[in-house]
Length: 502
Length: 76
Image 1 (cartoon, rainbow over the protein chains, first blue to last red):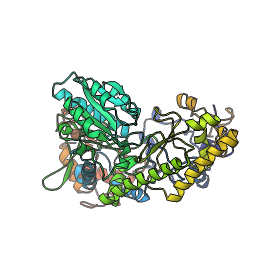
Image 2 (cartoon, rainbow over the protein chains, first blue to last red):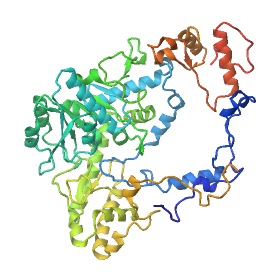
Image 3 (cartoon, chains in turn cyan, green):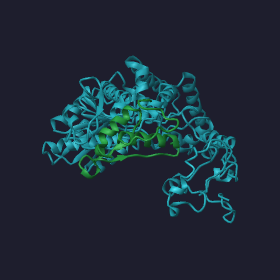
Image 4 (cartoon, each protein chain N blue to C red):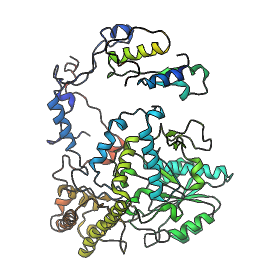
């Protein structure tokens, strides 16, 4: 399938013309540089790179960027993703030449500033989470999960406890949780949630045993609910000899109010692109630091950043800590992202971070309250929510035939990114809405108004909703085929045309 | 490079980061003990290459003439 439309842009190859490239070129090599290379290593023809003048190049990329919806474009209440505004001062910090120009193999004595920042960030995250130590190495949240579960595996193995082959995961969990446990070689056991959406203590009690290596819990859960029975659950887990992993995806709801390590969790990951306002990478680069309590510290990936008695900093040397599970990726992690996280934490301070979570929870409850008061959309779980909440379009679908998918597409016409839909799978026609703390009251009201207006349209002119979006660069796409059989290769419209290299 | 680690350290004090001592990457491989892994990119100028070559020769004891545009010994 090809995507076309008046708002889409030609490729750089279609804009290309011989001799149009302008502006700076690569610095000239020594005059005899090519003579020093073996003749059979030289190209016969120049590479077929597009040649485009600078103004056209800038317009090309600016126009492409405007086909994307981002947090700098408008409201983006994508539940579970914490799409909050990323302060631009963090970008300035990450681009300081001392950080941006540093080579990952630079000798420690030339990298003291970066090492000190990383050392401080490890401790800031430990303080925030109540954990004893933190690794910054994982490249993303899912790799953080894998790191955490490999640490659990190393812990049990080191104790000679080799029979623990199961990881218990509630049915509302992120799909990455069971995938992580499977990748680490464990069997996952799915535990149904209680009717109130929380963990079912009795179901966990029945499943816990000498084969349980760990449980994986997201708190607040993907239903936007703070687990009320977390203390009892963790006591049961530890009494069974198992460990407790906390998926930190929803940390934005609990900063300064709940410290997972203090509550008894043994290991957790941080999504810095959610809680600490580093950009969502669209596949990277990101960072998914992992915090652990004392019993898991010896197994953390190497290298950690160490502070010497004289106050200087260095990386652990290869083999220095033999109990480590080893590297999870090259070097110490995606340092540019970690600089942004450090800047965000230091700009807010302890009180500011608590305000972040308080405001995120307030915004979600305000928006939830607007929908509860109207009654058009169902709110399956009673009581206040955390930083996000579930609503359901099931009643609207029964009354009009308009599905949650249609509502989501129509929101695009109204100028909003849709919320997460059909997740968690335990709620029929689910919408998971997370407004975050960085939106103004007027935006929350306007979004609630848009949802209610779409519900009226569903009754009065349902085809307007089921055929949406009408104003987007492209209409409804075959998303399944696009994901499974992506066709991203450009081919010239006229293959007989002269090559770009001319 | 004979005594690569020490040469690397002395060049660093002169403001030149002479690549990566291979002994730090593969400490167990004796055949790499005297190696420096050095790289230039398209943004490395001919003058920088000449300066590096001059400083390396200087550290190794064969003192050539100072190249034009040199930042000089100990400079940064």
